[in-house]
Length: 403
Image (cartoon, rainbow, N blue to C red; front, side):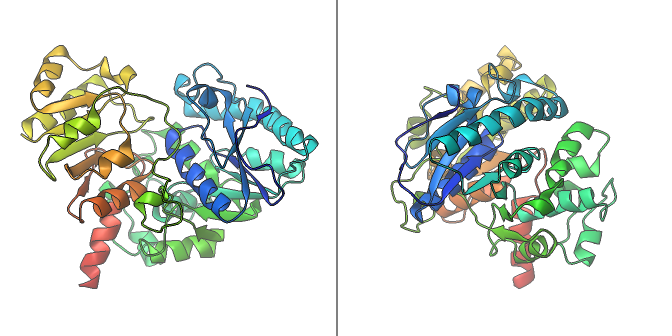
């Protein structure tokens, strides 16, 4: 797929917004939900996605038009490049040219973009837009707390390694005490994850030139952190970017799914959950990026089995081959292993009692959905911290302080 290809999106006049997410599921879906809200208010969104992403399934449909560009990994996408720095380097080299072609094609077709919303992990994208005379807005898919930690590291106000969040709290950046276990491991042990640290903090490179900075969070969750992001980076909270159905806001009642799934599964997740008691099931899901070695998978799997609780374990197919036959046999006794699940529907199921998660991308959205559906009884667990300030830390400690 080259250039722009029309879906059934509205072709009428109005503000035309290009949405350019990082081609990872945890980044794309929040931006898609933002696009749906923009369309609700009369704007015309066009999803600009990589050729690989658009090859994995049908386009999202109304209200989106779709345009394709190349990040240099058309055959296997981001997952085919294990080195995040190399991925970003090649994506910039190839993407700068192909994104410029998309913008030019839209203008020739009479759909000149009014603004481009981009993921700041793609720091090269706004340079392309500005060269074409298109204003930009950055959309940060993580919470304010995570964003400000990386922003402070980028600016040098938070020297690395970061032992805890005490300095951040003294400056008024965060409202709760954060221990090393609550911080992204990239800033606690930068030597262990140097390339991921580099990619994480470089999203602030040139951010001051963005016309607007939008954050996938909401002030009621982290008011002090949101205020700090606003004071330092002019950030505005626009989250949580959940499908409207799960927010009870009545705006888009038919919007029940995120819209992009890189994986599919015929496993009967929902029917299996229907057979489990309320709040009894442990959901273990580590997203589309997180990689566990065989030893870590063995430890996690045996821990799930030893819990004595029914569990739904989401393991990507390329990861599942690392699981021993012995462990697979144990898991069959009380659990279900699937390569993918419809996460929002699963989290909203009354059987879910605990979520084990890497806390990598969408914790605010996931925990909001889970707690809404299950009357607040569901918890968010984390056996391994991989780049996210713990959402339960922010919420639970603030609740303790308010008592």
